[in-house]
Amino acid sequence: MQLSLVIMAAGLGSRYGGTKQVDGIGPSGEILMEYSIHDALRAGFGKVVFIIKPEMREMMESLCGYLTRRTALDGSPVEVEYAYQDFSSIPAFYSIPQGRTRPFGTVHALLCAADVVREPFCVINADDFYGFDAYRQMAQALCRLPEEGRAAMVGYLLKNTASLHGTVTRGLCAGQDGFLQSVRETRNIQLYGDGSLRDLGTGRSLDPEAVVSMNFWGFMPSIFPVLRRDFEEFLRSAGDNPRAERLLPEMVDDQLRQGSLEVSLLSSAGQWFGMTYREDRELVARSLRRLHESGEYPKSLRD
Image 1 (cartoon, rainbow, N blue to C red):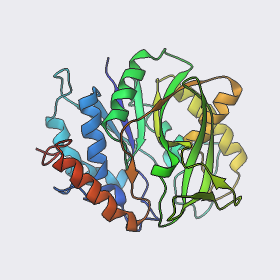
Image 2 (cartoon, rainbow, N blue to C red):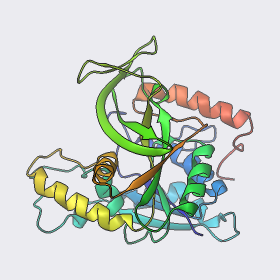
Image 3 (cartoon, helix red, strand yellow):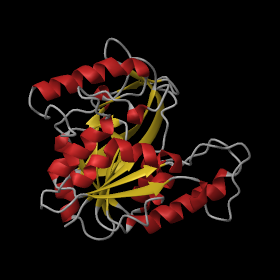
Image 4 (cartoon, rainbow, N blue to C red):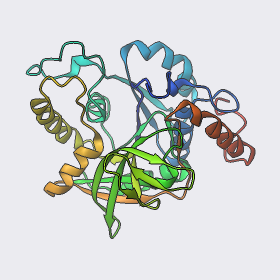
């Protein structure tokens, strides 16, 4: 069975202060996205789909063009596709608010890949490191999912996904018997030096051991009509709000409450890290260097 890795890479990482998706942070200049691709291929994925802005195509081909020389575990060439997240995919009934330049969130991003994803797939952020175990678990889960009404998510502990350098947004998850019950998108989460965490919006303390969504979702292609209906409903209520966006955890939570989707909740034994803020960079670089030195990754991912 062919499995696709879908990478949401159209964002520019405004809080980080630059295009963090193409920041060469590995020992040989690797970007975080290359670790995701490397891990997915060795877990059994055979196709990579990049969701990007149209103007990013040349840059992405120069960064990841070597993928066309790679083979999947079954010996077949790795397939590479590009999907563009721009306003051309917005339904005709909706008028783009004047002055809006930013996309409409991760539901919109994934919808832009509908024409090139025809197989079970995992969708991720471009600027997060998830670890090989997450891809191994997801590949196994995708091979077991029925065609409709089921999905999967790999969760991480909140304490391992926050930053000392500023607030983060995380999907706080509730689960039972191996299935996701709800996911609540929570903004302005702050980690403190003593390890405590607080929701600055409400002032309440948060459990460091809470499971959170880091946008590591597994879906069947049948999710695309669901996404389209959800996104169109969102647009009808968004009005002329120039910052409105629809996020995947919000869509999943609505489907869970309606009883239209069942999501297997997987827990990775691996390590997550990312660069929300530029001050996070040195810690991530050190972590990657240790993984190369331990033999988890080869000297260069591009050889």
